[in-house]
Length: 479
Ligand code: AMP
Ligand code: ZN
Image 1 (tube, rainbow, N blue to C red):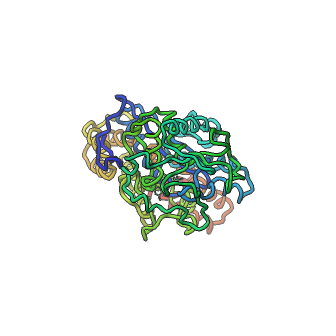
Image 2 (cartoon, protein in one colour):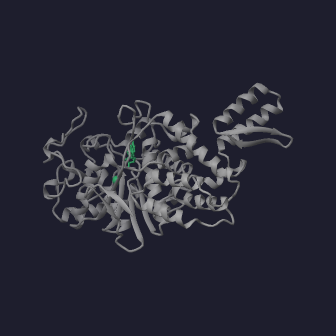
Image 3 (cartoon, protein in one colour):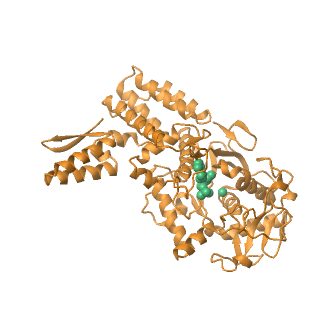
């Protein structure tokens, strides 16, 4: 498979460190609010990558973290800890906040049909303390490993200590800005007024490995003992420590959104070198953003950083959103707008209708090897997903046997993850929303409230189904 490596700025053929096995780390969310459509895009892309690698026969060893400490509201280290800020606003303990939002991540993963790092779709009722089993790693559960990692960097001479923190000294690493060329003198320290700056910090771009529970952080709740005093880890160090602890000091793929290139991943790479004196990650792969039509970042305050539940409330189902993301390549910038989402919704429903018109469940059919080969080649070509959807259209128009076409598309759905098989089945495959609406309509009809029943029929229509009232009750057909 070929992917774009942000470090070499080239498309590169993936040659795994160990034949047949891919080791991959995905930067996970900071669990202080519900994931928004931007975060969901990132995880949709890495879900496709994971599924494509499995389809191509690799054994995938993947890890994704939950950041539950150390990610500051300001990238220059001296903001507020995002989790502690929300905890104090809500009068809760930071671990309660993190637990709650980790639960919502698992729920969103489930609804979006995203695989867990271990390769399963995990039910949201799963005990939060069992998540390690599924390849999730929580920063606060890796404090010992983080401290050991920082010790290695210190022993190798890449750090200095001030009264407030232990820093990574970027002047000790010549190759610091290879992934993102930057004029390091320009990096502003404490650009925002409320940010307190450490007067003993040598270079604005040096970054915190361990923050001490002193000064403005005297009251920080999450704190652990360490060789540099009681305190808490910086944000970047957790990813280096967790990835190397679980995957080893050399692994294949590290992913994240493009926002991570200048700071988070540049710093992770520096820490890795500080600890091991060699390159740890072979391929750095980044997803483009979904932004506003004015090319601005989605933000909670502007009200456009919508959550999955808000999208569903507006009549777009999780599988529509999934289709929206996976029908383009991870490097294509996307705009967030309702017309485009509506368009993806129509395309998905039309795909399901075309398959259902073939009137076959694919059982007894044969895989069409020519198409499978083309499909694999498209995946290998830097995940050419628009090519994949064009191939599916071509297959649906072909004069191959219907059962072979359906069998082949259902096989492709191991990668697409659109739950095509479930969508083809009748009512039991309907989304929860449609089932709810049907139940309400049945009640309305029993109560002879025909106005309400007609309006519910329209609502069901918006989900792509026509309701037929038969002697055996309501039946639905795809529009
Ligand atoms: P965070 O919780 O901010 O660390 O974000 C979790 C993941 O979502 C990271 O990999 C980010 O790069 C990614 N991400 C954040 N915003 C967007 C966006 N608007 N579009 C795509 N990816 C995003
Ligand atoms: Zn990370």
